[in-house]
Length: 144
Image 1: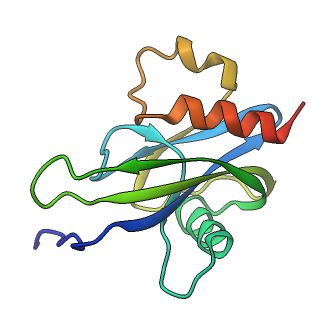
Image 2 (image 1 turned 30 degrees about the horizontal axis):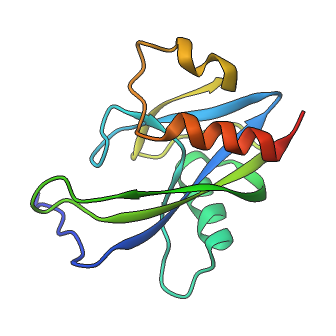
């Protein structure tokens, strides 16, 4: 198996804070980058694809869920930490669950629906950087 060659330029990615019954979906990465960390489903934007198209596609590919995108909740830049690592600009959106139950692809190995105000008490879960802030921002967009 050959190593993944990272692009030499920053890549645009999208992620979704998906809310259902007052809880947000966290997924655990099954491989690098961020293997073993809980984050939001999402991935790279393909050439010619809008951010919303990419987000709906990535969420469907990774989780099988159908979502309604509400709005931009925030963004995060991930700089390469080591040689060969990727440089990403991640646009994170607030979304509502619409249909289907999670069925994870091989990029993910676990999921949990968690109340946003319970994130601080999840000391045993490894969370990607900036995740809590994005979820809090997304929760404000979703509303009560």
